[in-house]
Image (tube, rainbow, N blue to C red):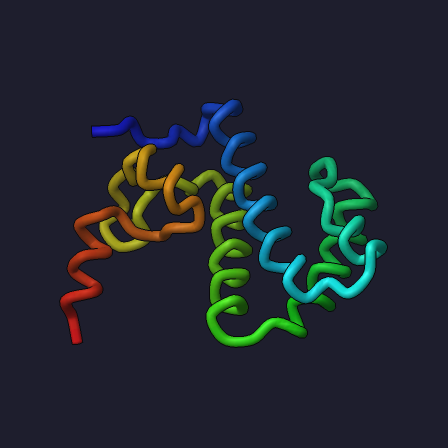
Length: 123
């Protein structure tokens, strides 16, 4: 079984922040119309002016997304909030650590394997 993500592990936090921004960028690239919009999607340094400007551009591009892409973008945004608040890597249902292998496979996941399976079985 994989190790859970520790909120104090800066290297893992940086890895998942990068992975989540890359996933967000890939989704937004599907609707970005110009090179300038694509350039605005680059991963900025945390909390700087570029970060805020990039977030504004991402919000405008997100308005062009629909359906599944929009849900995925929302899940990524929520995962970034959990990462910033220090609760990333814990199942939102049972609060147990999510296996590192699962997080690497699905960085925006909110549930451990057991809770996800239970959710899928519930009508």
